Every structure is written in C-alpha cells, then in structure tokens.
Length: 328
Image 1 (cartoon, rainbow, N blue to C red):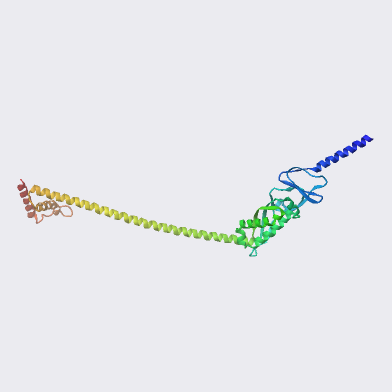
Image 2: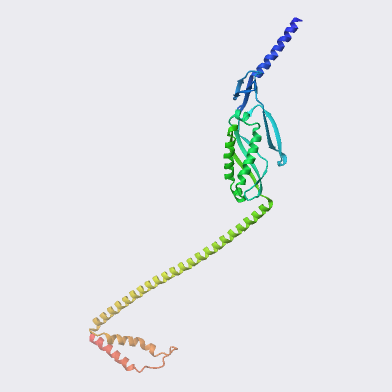
C-alpha cells in the first residue's frame, strides 16, 4: 500500500515537473515576439529562439485583434482573434469601401490598402487597445480629411500625392503605437454614375477636339511643305534654265569665235593663193554662184527664170578666171 502511494506521489511530482518545464520553456518563431507580464506588469519581450521564463509568474500577454477581412463575393466580414504572439512582418490591411466627399461636394467611393509593420511590440500592446481597429479608423478619418481638401479633378489625377500624404500623416500618428506605415495605396476611386458619364463625354469631346486640331495642323503642314516644294522646284528650274542659257551663250560665243577664226584663216589663204590684197570680189563671186541654183527655182523646186543678173554672174566668172590666170 505504501509502495502504491509512493508511486502515485512520484507520478504526481513527475507530471508537475513536466508542467513546470512546459511552462518554463518558450520557443518563439522567427519574425515573431511575445510580451511577458510578471504578476500583471510588463516584464520583458521574448525574442526568436528558445526562451526560459518563470512558470506561473511570467505569463504571455494575450492581445485582442479585430479587423475586417475580405470574403467571397467581395464582401467584408469582421474578424476577432486573441493572440499571444505578435507578428513582426509587414502586414497589409485591406479596408472596405467608404464614401468620402470632395471639396466641391461630390461623393465618391474609395478603397484603400495599408502596409504597416510593428517595430515596438510593447507600445503596440500597451499604447493602444486594438491596434488593427485603431489603424482602420485613423486611416478612414485621415482619408476623409485629405480628400475633403481636394476637388474632384484633383482627387482623380493626384493619387500619388494622396498616397504619400496619407502615409506621412499615418506614420506620424502611429509612431507612438510602435507601428511603421510603409505604404498607402488607393485601389479604387469611383465617382458617382452621372459624374462618370459626364466625364466620359468630356473626355470624348476633348479627344475629338485634339484629333481635329491635329488633322488641321497636318493639312496645314502638308500645304506648307507642298508650297515650299513647288517654290524650290521653280527656283531650281530657273537656276537650271539660267545656267543652261549661260552655257548655251558660251557655246554660241565659242562657235562664232571658231567660225570667225576659220573665216579669217580662209581670207588669209585666199590672199596667199590669189596674190591680191582685196579678196572681196572672189568671195562675192563664189557666194553668188552658190546661191544661183536656189534663185532660179520656184516653191516647187522647178527652174522657171534666169535672173537678170546673169551678166553679173558672167562678170564674176571672168573675175575668177582672171585671178587664177594671175595666180598661174
């Protein structure tokens, strides 16, 4: 009986030791941390790896996290979780669509994404009661304030400026919570249906106007180029004709010069052959003899008359004969 009692006692002690060891050893995963409280007060923060704590005195702090999660069909559902481990990785928070009013009183639907990371687990646990919910409400109010300071056109074309402005404001506001806001993105910016239709009409009209302007400018440019081409063509043609005339005149001058030189040389040869200083009678006689056949023909080429100047021709022949006799 005593042995059974002793075995039971040893079993209880062994189980108690196992519980104590289980409560004393804490393994923390990489990129996670655990906040430890000792008798209700903050004690320390456990880092990744094997950690030893005092059992029954050091207790991990359980944190309540409530956030909105996107489900099937694009609907958002509230989710509540109780965690004793805090994730230090960068997290993304997908906010549901909310209505905001612009500076010119236009209501729009905006859906935002928030990328944040916990840098101080102690502040994230003790400085705010529910970190995801606090970030969500702060983002919604900040987004309303930022969009409310812009008109419709500015809010549609200034997404980068809005994202950066939101990031700066949220990062400053959440710094005391131990959170670093890395990036804010606007997924959807949906103006009302009538505003969207009016914007599409305006955009279509603007595109038609630009197309008309571009077409007119193209025609104008084509007309200018065509006129410049015609002008250049005329100038080049005139230059070509002028150069051609100059070359033709130079050629005629050269030809006349050659003819004159040949005639002068012929006259000199006649003077040498005839031995006279005046070759004019000889030249006249030869030219008269050459022209006589043409003078005795009508328009049909038939010989019809003998010119009255036949005696002059005979005199010319006599003159030529006399010259040749003199030459002999």
